[in-house]
Structure formats: C-alpha cells, structure tokens
Image (cartoon, rainbow, N blue to C red; front, top):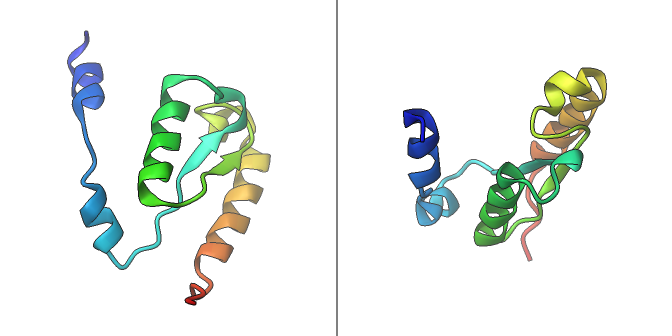
Length: 88
C-alpha cells in the first residue's frame, strides 16, 4: 500500500473524545458512493457517534462532481448544525 493509504486505513478515531467535545459533528456521505470504502467508514463513524449521516450530491468527491448542489446542501446542513440542540 502507498504510505498515505496505509496510514488512513489504520486510523481509528477517538469516539469518546469526539462525543465529549462541544462541537456538533456532522458526518457526510456521497449519494453515489454507497457501498464504497469512504461511505462505509462514514456510516460506521456516524453509528458509533449515535448520529444520522447526512447525504450529499455526488460521490466521495461530490464537491468536485456537483459543486452547486453540494454547496447548497452544505449550506443547509451547516445552518441546521448551528441551531441549538434540543435536549429532552
């Protein structure tokens, strides 16, 4: 494997630290990347964080494939993420 690919494939996020942080984490997946490694990793992270993944237009690099649709969706997602969290 190339060094960067090997390093990426061995990375394990500190989910406890991510959960403990004050920042709201939004996990995004490309609609056209279903079943691919980046999508599977994102879905696994979202599950471990206890959050729903957010779909974006295009594949893993949707910002290149469909920049206008990606930007519109990102703007919407970020504006929602800035809203105060509802606590029950």
